[in-house]
Length: 294
Image (tube, rainbow, N blue to C red; front, top):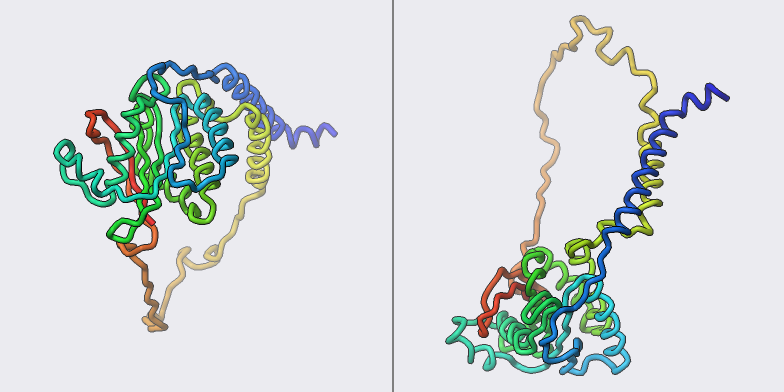
């Protein structure tokens, strides 16, 4: 029995270390978790779901509002969802004097930025931390349907172009079939994107830290349990004079040819997206964001 315990002693120690780390993570994340408190009292509305295109039922809108309310307090950012079904060409072009020439993919950007500014959204202050998804169902003259993710405050700096692309592509992939599920997924993705970025937000939920540590210890054991095995003392060249085989016959023989083709995505793709950097809205406020089309 003692010999058995001695053999596995190292693995017991490793498991213990991982368990201690897991318990430490649980304590740390419990201490670090902070409940955000809204400090913006100047917003013109408490509404978060503006379904002007009427793509959701009343029950779905209310369910989305409730999810947004919980998520906002978890990440410290406002989350707004707006749907439209109208051309924004004339609207966007009316602001070219302030922001310069706009292309069709920017029509939704202009509207989203202005909508955010006009309502003074922001969890911490007017024009502060938050995101706004504008999904316009209208097909513009170029045949595309455009959407825009507006980021403001800390979300503007924490959202990279790649993150915006991923969030829009994933959430709007099946929006035509089920708008509510698409917008609900958008809220979930925002929570994931910003949960680890907020002040005091735990890197690993406390409930998962202990089992994750145990799983890591088990994986470590099985991956490394063969490390004590004896090493090979001979190889295929052990009995070869000089330790290196001599190749007497060399020749190149053509066997076959393989051609690999890769499809390069162009503007004619059915779906596309593009992340955008910081810019200034018609109202003079700083925003980030990116667009999506289908």
